[in-house]
Length: 335
Picture (cartoon, rainbow, N blue to C red):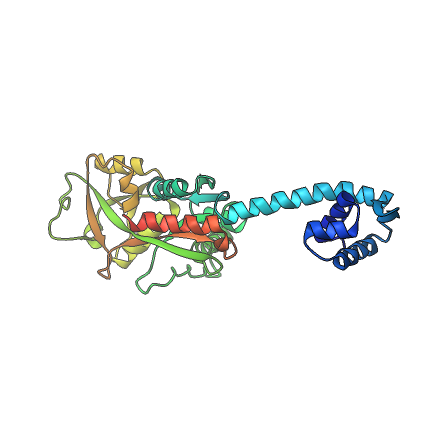
């Protein structure tokens, strides 16, 4: 196998015309140069230099190899420089995938701080909700995925739906199995490096004229909203709402479902229902015509969602990725 160090010796011998001169140029001994040239000739199984009077010249095979060696060594030098730039954060790339409310609140200050100190690091952003964002991370389409999940009272991941009975139609069984697979994809982070960012409080959104609007006596219990019509958000948020309400002893009547948070606020302001939204969502929406109140679960704990940054173990060692994680944590901690 041809080694780069042997090609450097070949280049020095061709340039200086002797082993001894090549040794002086490379800062080693003449026997060392001779040994490396012999190793290189053994690798290609043909002589590379011929003696000419007091000096040496390359053979035809040596000239061919030198021609290629020049490009190979230049490429290696460029690669070493690029890697050094990435390691020193003079260059690099971080592809972020984030859900919308984090894109508008956490990502901007984090990226701005990173660029202030390291303008050579390129950061890109694509929006996607889990589980799609997790699939993109595991599929190599990004380096960091911002995601969220809802903790349970005991701190465990949400329980999977019970398997349907054998008497249930095949379509219903398939739908339940798909739901279980999607839930596992969202909540199973065992193969990822998890950087906790913040606990995002869930906030009740009520029409301004609602009897519980602006309550001064503390958080609203979900059970107090059991008779209301509800406006739900994304599929994962919708599932969490149903779970919270079930814990409070009722099933919510969901009349409207939309991923668009301004639409949720507009529907609530028009008196068409109530909603529970993440606090981050309300930072990007003008809450005209609505009142927001803290929400407490049946256990008495505040309702929150855990917001995290996820990456793969190998990617966590890349300097630009590690710095971006640090900046995201700083942006969340500074809130």
